[in-house]
Amino acid sequence: MTAMGAHQDAAGGSARGWLWWGRRRSAVLDVGLGLVSALECGLEGVGFAGDAGLPVPVGVLFGLVAGSVLTLRRRWPIVVVLVSIATTPAEMGFLMGLVGLYTLAASEVPRRITALLAGMSSAAVFLVTVVRMRQEMQQAEGFDPSGWYILLLSLVLTLGLNAPPLLLGLYVGARRRLMESLRERADSLEQELSLLADRAEERAQWARQEERTRIAREMHDVVAHRVSLMVVHAAALQAVALKDPQKAVRNAALVGDMGRQALTELRGMLGVLREEAPAEGPEPVPLAAVGRAAAAAAAEAASEDGPCLDALEELVEQSRLAGVVVELAVLGESRRYAAEVERTAYRVVQEALTNVHKHAAGARVVVRLAHREAEVAMQVENGPSDAGAADAQLPSGGNGLVGMRERVNRLGGVFVSGPTDAGGFRVSAVLPTVREAVA
Image (cartoon, rainbow, N blue to C red; front, top):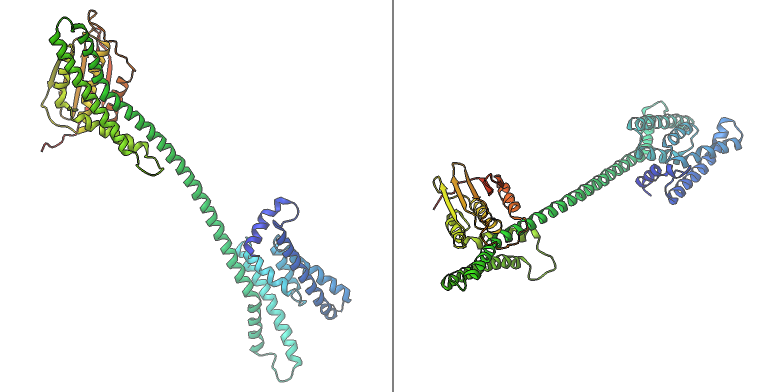
């Protein structure tokens, strides 16, 4: 039974009733020590009664009461040491003195009080030893009781009795406090790790949501424009199939080309998503990695068809072939920008033209691109829809403008959209640029 466990029991035992022991074996140990100490002090009380001229039963009773105080060592260690000091002149309480000093040093009593009581106990033992040895040597022949021998021997005996239990108690108390601090630190670290795990889970959830949004945006931007053009060309093909077979053949060829391009882009994106899945093993690929791969695949797939500012003329031409009157105006010196900037600018114009096909059939469109010193600006403005033009009845999910705004805001740009006074619609975006060196 260590003092660490003893004092932990004493610290938590007060809430369990008048008994201060937390465990039964602690109570058994203390009661056993108290009985042994009481028996020792009772036997030593016989000699004390004879020296003091008291009746023997009184001396024995005094010894039994004084020795039984050791039972209180966990609750009141100071009282035990004080009783031990008080019984030292009567030459009783040897076990009580040793165990009392150990318990006092190992307890949470302030160190100045421990030092004071330890000094008092040592002084009492030293004085009693000096007096007793002087009396014994006076009765012996050939010894000088006034020499330094008595003092030195008394000092050695005092240190031998008091120093070991005191030092052991200090060591056990320090070890107990160290273990408690380590336990508290471990609990604190466990709480911090739990908080970090919760935050990591929240960040992972946020990242998964962001990647889902990014994948949806890439799918929408890559596929929606070409599919919209295919629907427009299919409607034109249906209208001219009997009147102008040659034009119908050209429209059919355009529909086929656009369908193949859309399938190529979609196949590239889905192919990368499959490649990111592990061939073996139960652990799934994080959605964030899949989303980044999908975005990269979309960019790579789109790059084959010119997802950059240099391909705007081709993009506009595709809308012209679908029957839309589109004017392209480029202002400023054309130059290369970061790939993400050019791709975002291209997607904004592409989605704006897609919305024209969906919602403003037959309207005139003006596409403006301005190269400025530290930014690139684009604007797609269409006039009112031609009431005589056939509506292609393209479905709309309402995600086009949202996707454009997200793309522009992610690069720190400005996005504005809304109806014009003439009854049309305008989409404008300004992107900050980082110029790239052209090899």
